[in-house]
Image (cartoon, rainbow, N blue to C red; front, side, top):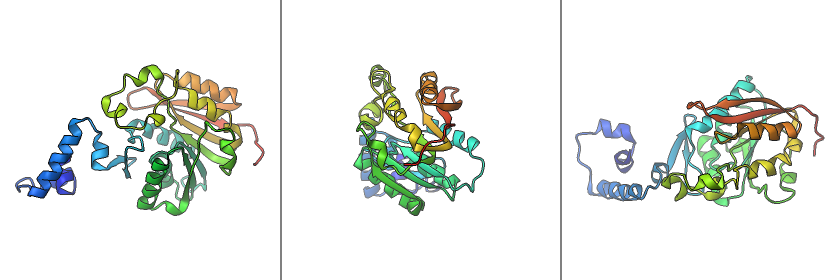
Length: 265
């Protein structure tokens, strides 16, 4: 992958040009890339992109690296919304690179999205990804912080679908993460407090007013948080749809429906 990055064109270019020698410029680029990788910098940061849901996303140190486990949430939403022509309004809380929201816009060509994030750097990346992938006219991004009272008042609800991959790593587990995560990915997108559930508590206090009657929420979770987040949904008056597992068989996404009509803001 690094050689492909150095010569331009990716691993397939390496296979196609396997018999040619690298130029001095290419050797320099490769050497610098190898040096970065030996510090455990993520490959996605070195290459500058990461594939998610068959789409290519720009990635920087301002965003989490999109992971295959998160595709569980996309699959869960598609199981619930089977009409690909549905004109959905989708809200993404903590959008990061925009990978979840933009992946869903690729599946629902008549949908529109709104993503918020506390990081201006992440929002810049999300906007660039939206433009590159051709979704700029169907999505808006804005600064938003669920730690600030009244954070939901400017979100122009209600929505048909609210998605989120909030920070959910507990304080104890933060110290057990791989170095390429701890040293290079944004801590505020990872750390979820003592039990990993701080963000869920703050979001759920405002969630009912963000959804249309019958609307759906889909949240990514840690492998041991399914019961807790399901309880949050139920305590907020939502009808639990289910808990979806990732390819490793671990709980990864919780879905619920807003069964109580909410007044438009």
